[in-house]
Image (cartoon, rainbow, N blue to C red; front, top):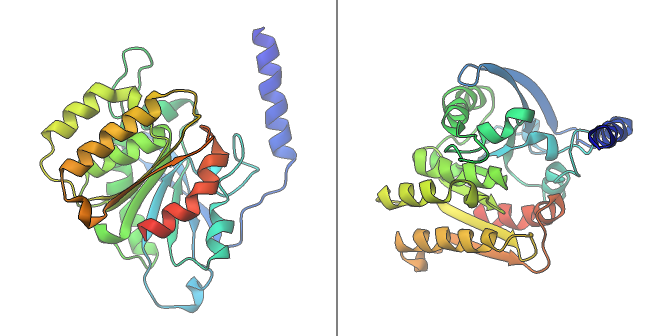
Length: 266
């Protein structure tokens, strides 16, 4: 049985390698040392279509799992079409995609250790983004570097770590997109952390499907949303919750929801 699944994995890799790249010409990549993680990270950068012809500065969204954002060739189960979507609406935004650490993905994207699954090294991952990556981006590209113009976004564990980032670095990330957030992984620890948090002024876009295979996805998301609502008047309209009918825990849901999330956040 083990050999069977290994064969399936190999065939999937061969299939991906056979596909042509779908990344647009607005997307470039570079590698950056990540001392906090004791590794090197590949970073993907999406620039607006008119970037080279303009002198203006742009807001930035930091996104996880860069392999799945721009290019079907590098994606695991389909891409988000982030570049094509933004190109189609002439979006004035810079996207920074951070490749996940493959077998270390769970460690990087989880704030606290889970008794069953381990993990819990998101502090190092976020320190890399805030102290190493963001300064590099702000010094290389024309960015609006304040919190109001800096967002962080991800799905599943990426949704979890994105929300955690707003609690740890509220002065850095003023907006967040939480797609199908896996709050279950650190439910107690996150609830405890929120209970200790006095102020919360981040603009939040919550999204999940009603057919993700686990009712706790919706329940946990609504628990966090309720906490957010206790921190400010709902009249400020700083958070939005979207539950997609028949939506599943996959790239299709996140791809089809990205445009609306971007437009609402910015």
